[in-house]
Image (cartoon, rainbow, N blue to C red):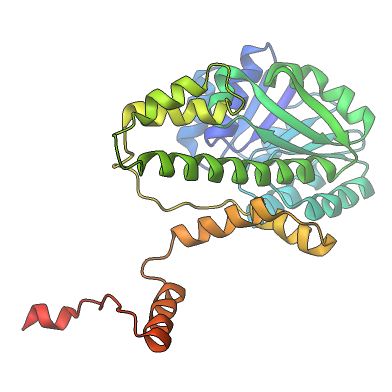
Length: 307
């Protein structure tokens, strides 16, 4: 089938390659002309802009967006919708907010266009292993997309999880769980590294746990790879970003009064990783000094160095 792929970053480019390798015709577009040229070298047909991309597709036209969530996706979606007609399909594969996807689906439906929100998991390994695809859509759009989904997904790795909006909601919760798992692994290996009576080989332990333990997982396998390359991760700065989906998960929990303490704590731990000499820690130290006379570590006065 024909698929127009808009956005050829790490995920989009690899997804285009899997579609091509699966025997599908891909028309590709990106603001980065070099990215388009790389896709063309692998067999994609380049398009100079969205109008050219849509015009090159056979009906029903399928346009798959793999763009940063937020304003970029909103802008390109608004530009693409008028180019499509009844029965055409527009897929948003970004980590978009599920309520935005619901709204976008309603806008598309007014034009007769079928909107599909698709949560995509698999990262840079998706090219080799296949992706996990969580789709919010109507039944007809899902069945139309099935040949492309078969090419993109790992075995048994795609599912229509519900109507429009559900795909990105399920991906949001997926990422919240991911936050908690990663935090648990991080804390566990920090404790292993702090063992006082021996220098535990962290990579060896990670490798051991991959064989039959109840905490074996792909994340642990990736941790093993990182530890084999850098046994104490001394070349990694402990600054952890977040894509926003963890925040949305916690926001949803607050809205619905759902107790999600592990995911919430993992999100806050990421915030904490970005702070150096945080005000909260400084005030805690100062309070202990004031009420109990406890000593505090004085901040270095840089002016003293200049003297």
